[in-house]
Length: 320
Image (cartoon, rainbow, N blue to C red; front, side):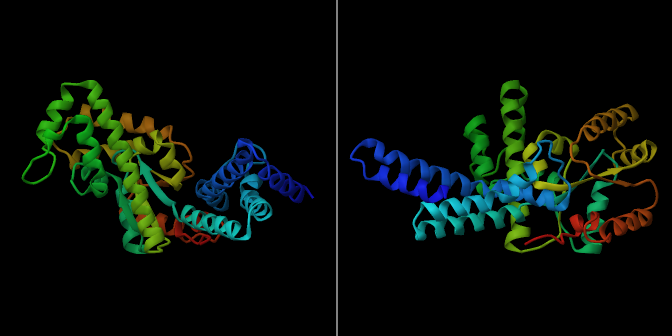
């Protein structure tokens, strides 16, 4: 009975010959627009609840998120015209589908733990699309990165004279020289790099999950990025942490980079371990302590668990 009364009050307010007559419809349009747009982040959160990787600290959050869409449609159907309520429902559906596809598993871990090897096994044996965050970061200075927006943003802060007029690419030496001379500029560049990298990762996830409609997508992400970015943690579900004994990681890094000293390698391992230990939502661990064949067996066990366990979250047997 509340909604018909609210509708009559709204229609009565619209008949008033005063500026206040627009307040009711304006508030209604703003409220419904906000409710419709909120379907995008809420659908990401609903997917976390379905995969049982989110642990809400607020009591009643899960049912509130689940029934928000129904409440939105009910209000819009009672207080708006049929055409507008259908339009609101259509946009809500679009936002819901996009949000439900805007998620992918993430593999992280300390340096030398073998997270790239895990991603390669998922790609080779289970047809996963891999989004490598290190490759995204390395291509940040390219003129084609993120449709040219990254270069435009960097040049607007650092200066347009860092671009080679012939190739159109950023001159790395000039950029590094300018950043080293100005710590404040270096901080701004780091923030730009982080935002452009995360935006590119989300774009790549949507390309694989929405445009190509692939179920299996995994992000190879350094622990520092997953630790610092709440947006990245929201998109990446579940987060898989690869662990390995300290001695194994030390030998892998020494083989990978023979020019580094033992002290430098130990420092890199310590810094990364501190970040991994503080990484939120690290719901699954993979121990990489032996040969690659043993690691492949552990990945197979992780992926092929029954629906409702880890296998459902990794393999992508989800809604939509």
